Image (tube, rainbow, N blue to C red; front, top):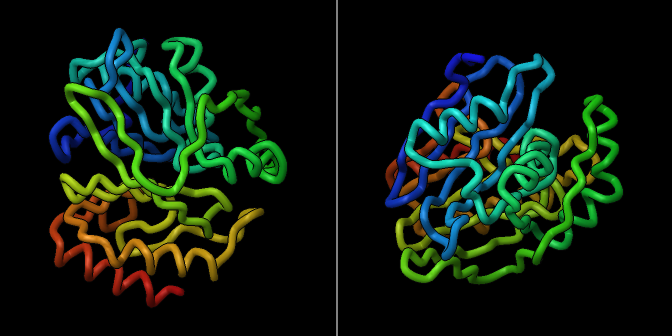
Length: 244
């Protein structure tokens, strides 16, 4: 079946590919770190999103096509990183694991949330709760991935949108992957179960202190999905703090 192009592919830095959601319904932006891990499954995917969303758009199938267009195979994914476990960020985990045998990682706090309060979100949206077990937990600090094409990510625990949300800072390329903590001109919502506006404020304050030239967000706004340039990133943080 031929699907419309629901993703825009943008290469941000080195081997980081951003798949910006262009559909009408809800779904997150997805990120691929290509050719990092050793072995037959060298790719890392961050927040694979929905399988099928509320408008019945084939999110995963069109993501697969977008990844293939860039010369990669979804079957070659070795690691799935979840910034958090809301349905629009991790529903496709289960299907990807079946296709690629990838392992999953997220924070311990988010895993506990997913198995308890977080299940209510899936009920609210009429979605099936994906079943997956993390191979290891993300912890605050450095996450070193790969050998030849080594990537060092700084994991930041940034609760507020959800209790165990994480952001990933790639200091070498000054890239910040924010999940749903902060967007281009906006912030993540805190009215879902487990959300906290006061915690979100503290998390955004932490992020704003880092040297970032690419702010790569979990959803697009009317302004876009990627804030480019150090000054623009700083202005964005100044602007979003007005919401809090």
